[in-house]
Length: 608
Image 1: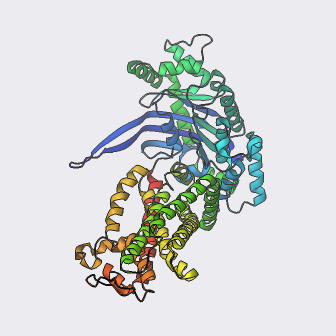
Image 2: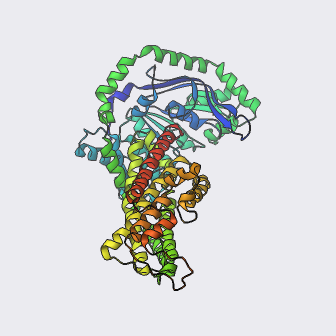
């Protein structure tokens, strides 16, 4: 495993007077009410390189919030300072020099351990790091974290302990000075928990600064820590100091741990007492010599180190492993496309089911039109067929793509905020990977419809038939991506999609003659994928029909040519390139809107 001499004298310290978050209660007919919640109050402490610090407290005490605040990954208002060697640091530097292991292990589950580490190393390490160096780093991590036996196992098949070790390995790729771990033993048996803490203990002995929140540890796990920070509900600090000193402090408050009792369970029981008791504990610690010594230690850390020495030490000895020269957007996009394509192909049963479903839909949509003829009765039938094909293609691709971002939003937010890649390459890699699948599925869909209905023209006829369907389907993927990026869940997106789709396909030309649309509503057809797709298909199919036999009943109106059909529905025979341009513009504008919404979401949403 990599070792960094720059980390040997690293001291993380903090003095947080308060941490608050603001929430809004929204109302339809009156002003929003703003609520401010204070989650942490008067929390101080430090963690030195080579030490293992535990943050403990009952549920709701603010353990994860404090950990996120120390790592500067929290979206909240902080009054106070987080310092390295006595110097306040910003989020950018903290993200570069630290790793954050979340409580929930998130990764693209179809990748193997080796594939996941190669992907992360390629995008997080300096692009000047050679493949041999990268391979040595990954091999060393796999060996030291005891992942050799599962290095070619898919992440979905790993045990809880193995997943946590993989999360540790992911963060250790860049050899961070500081490692933040959020409840790394939650949900594990005693053996797995001890195994994970042994790894953290080994890392701390190699000069790393380890800060970990932990909930109800066993006595064995608890004694592996050097220092402990105890919090009570409401985010107040009840103790900070050595692990043995915690029992001594509580004993001085008349709270003695019974023999053969887990000290951690005893402390958590006392921290979860009535508000009056916990308030007294916090006040007694605040007035104790322990707290005075803590404040004095933090002050001496501030006075004893200079910013320049710290930064220069990092630049010379540590940041050579960091993305000072980050991988280019092209590299990020190519690797993200590789991962997305791999995930798609490994989910082969879903691909097969989707394909079968599309073929069945094509079959049932086309069967009623199998005996259609080019005559007066056939005009309505063929136009209905064109409408059905375009509408089915649009709906199928829109709603299949709608799940694109919600399915990976947690992984994506975490990786973007950890500096693995940027929002732009991720969004556009997803958009590009969708295209081959959409084109292949739509071509297969069109081939069944084309041959079942018996449309003439051979290969050229098939090209003319399928091209507007493919263009409409591709534009619909942009619409689905856009809505998927804007809304946080599928149900909310669907509530908006359904009325929007209803409005736009009303103006496709089948339900209302386009020339009769009021001027103030005409603009709607120009944002309708249904209008562009159906008009393009109608022009391609009817413009090559020069004669349509009239009905034997001379009292019935007769449309003698394909151009007459176009005129009946309000379509312009010269609008073909306008239609394809409109679909392309839909594709481009919707993706731009989707990207802006996606980027804003990645910057504002909390990831811890």
